[in-house]
Amino acid sequence: MDNRDENKPITVCFVGNPNCGKTTLFNAFTGSKLKVANWPGVTVERVEGETVYKGRRIHVVDTPGIYSLTSYTIEELVTRRCIEEDGVDVIINVVDASSLERNLYLTLQLLELKKPVILALNMMDIVEKRGDVIDTRKLSSVLGVPVVETSALKGKGTKELMETAKKAAGSAAKPAVHAFSDVIENAMGQITELIKDVTEEDQRRWFAVKLFERDEKVLARFRFGQDVRDKLESIIAAVEEELDDDAESIITDARYQYITEVVKSCVKKKKVGMTVSD
Ligand code: BGO
Image 1 (cartoon, rainbow, N blue to C red):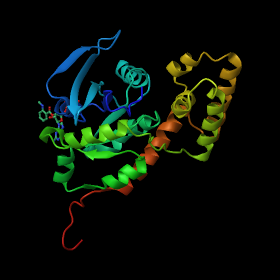
Image 2 (image 1 turned 90 degrees about the vertical axis):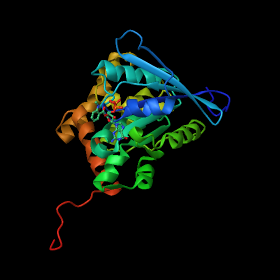
Image 3 (image 1 turned 90 degrees about the horizontal axis):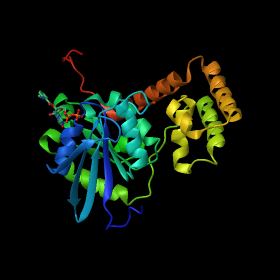
């Protein structure tokens, strides 16, 4: 769908960790006219709403709270399916800004999907009350996505979020993707080569990481022959041997290392316990 056509509704999907304030923000964004059903085939609730911003219809889908985009839980599968198959134009990643480090893990995975992502830094009232400062401009530039400060409980930031969603749907800009270490990137390059004829360019990074992690669901959808499976396994095993860890932990550790750097460069925590003599 050409989402730059001003007459077409934008589909926005809310994604975030449990308790990040996603439901509160979703309700503030959409108002009270919500459609509640189950996701196809599972007993997980699907909530949809619609709002109109400056004449543009915005169709909004909420997804269950998740910590990661693996395939281990129904909630994660439902969210992945929604993003991949439901014609989502923009992902609003709701983040609890008072627990930025933990919440950014999911964010990094969402960025790999190469869909427009907006970071809604929710619970900013708590951050401010603590006296911490988040350099949102820097965070936006490091992650390559728009960042909007919100305090859902106080209804703050929803209009800016709508404006940003409207702009993001009409923009061809894609989020920046964090580069792993050379050893891992080399493996990603080889895996990308294996799948380049059967994937679209925008999907390759996401699939390469998932295949490296031996994600069963992603592996199954490719229906590789034994020769490709063997090649893939040898690429993964070589990295595991070199880094002396299993593939999934290698990716998890690399993501957390990067998140630590991002948080260090973008968040100034209020010093506690300082006295005149300190
Ligand atoms: C309770 N700021 C603050 N301070 N709190 C917020 C904000 C915000 O910006 N946004 C949401 N909350 P959900 P998920 C609660 O329910 O939307 C609060 O899981 C309580 N309840 O009000 O449900 C929100 O959908 C009793 O808090 O999150 C809610 O992502 C005492 O964050 C909680 C204190 O929001 C989770 C809080 C009986």
